[in-house]
Image 1 (cartoon, rainbow, N blue to C red):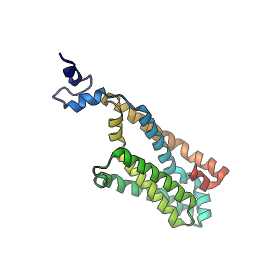
Image 2: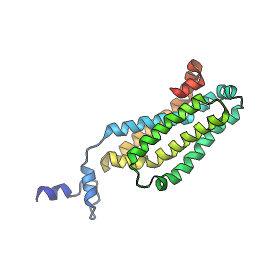
Image 3: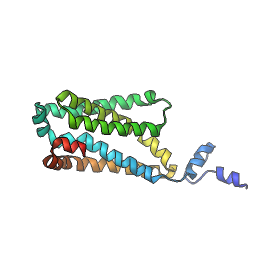
Length: 193
């Protein structure tokens, strides 16, 4: 057996029914765990940003002179934009480099936080929340595909569990952290952090 045929033979866990060379080569690739953990950190920040208003309804409503119920609609707006984005991003992004797209979405997440933190009125606040919805929809619709590119096929479940760990951690930590930061630096400062 030549060195070349050894490289292209199916690996453990790879399909044996005439899998394309790319599958075997993908199984041989080295795992880029730093990329997985960076994406998990982004997931944490993203979900924390999504749920931050839950614990800050009163100060946000007071400052923007709207009811707590209207501030609560910011979570609905972000969810609606997340759904719309997840349904359309693959056709809109087309052949765009996924890494570039994720970096753009991460930048938009920061812009969203800045808009929300500096919002002079309710409408501006809601625009910032809509942007975080765009990021949520875009990020979640591509996370599994990115996991498959960052690690060998056999490691994809582990990579996805790390992503979801960031999600679960943020869901548990974001509301009390938002409340704590809101008490120390105000609700606007909480969105900057």
